[in-house]
Image (cartoon, rainbow, N blue to C red; front, top):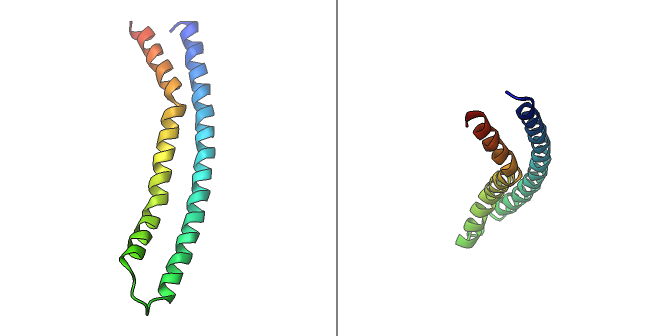
Amino acid sequence: MSLELENEVLDLHSTLELRKVQFFNEYRIAAVVNTIAAVGLFCLLVWAAVQAEDPASIYLAIFLIGASFAPAVLSLGTLWWRWNVNTVDVRKTTAEIERKLLG
């Protein structure tokens, strides 16, 4: 491997390490948002338990199901999208280095 390719690989490794730190920071934000959503859902469920004598409406049930699933699904989708957006240059550079090595 030439010195130029070796430098490109080292630069790529440094870029990937920076992206991992950025992703971890974004993950921490998502974890805080999920914690806040969990506390809110807990309060909502406690309220629903206190109101157990009253008949539950279908709208409340649908809302509780949505409130249970939405934070995790949205966090996962957002983190997946952000990782793909933040690493597109790494994937392109990796493909370029691979092309140089093989061709």
